[in-house]
Image (tube, rainbow, N blue to C red; front, side):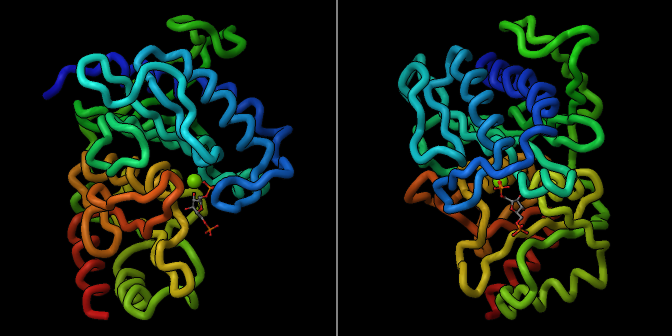
Length: 307
Ligand code: AHM
Ligand code: MG
């Protein structure tokens, strides 16, 4: 197994360091900011806050060359050139507050991180690591860094008031589960979008899956994917009849989640092959996302193939 990459670990330290501060800031930031993001979605004050804090924290990490966010039109240059031989720096792609429409209803949300060894847009094969923070009843971080997938609990140290410098971030990361693999006997599923907007073949597949698994859908990809990570199953935000590329973004959402799930022995698909092989045209490209136990993803691909 590969040695931990110090830059990758510093990126996860920085993301973890922001988590308690983001969490504390949310109660006053459930309102619209007045802006739209590059995908044309309404941006909440919480999205803006998380994006700015993560930019600040990640800019300070040596070895991060660019910060690319779902909330910003372009990559921000924050250090050395990305993907250079030798001392190449990484491009870090962030969905600062995934599922932020759950802010109003006070349900789960998260932060998604993908660390690419190439300038964006790049394929998921260029990811060296990926993970996500889940703001549930507990703040956890799932990390796939090449040494296996682990779940950590992220907590503010007693008496700490927030982000500090470097090692003094005032935040602890405690590994609570190591070498995570998807459970062999899947039990849950969660599919986004409205049933009438689903193509017939996906509707057929969903009908089969409904008879076998329990529905777990909360409207935040990180929360719904974490159900699959914990219990096994399948998560999808499918292609829609009027939106063949679905809703989720390849660089910020689909690739990092596919990297995590494939690192756990599961499978990812855009409907015909691994998400990680999808060639992007732009950093805000959308893609249909299907992830979970291999058998369930294989069946999905076979079902879509019949259409
Ligand atoms: P966001 O990152 O802007 O919050 O959007 C992505 C979210 C995902 O977390 C979730 O899977 C999906 O949008 C839910 O969409 P919908 O509200 O259409 O079900
Ligand atoms: Mg998102």
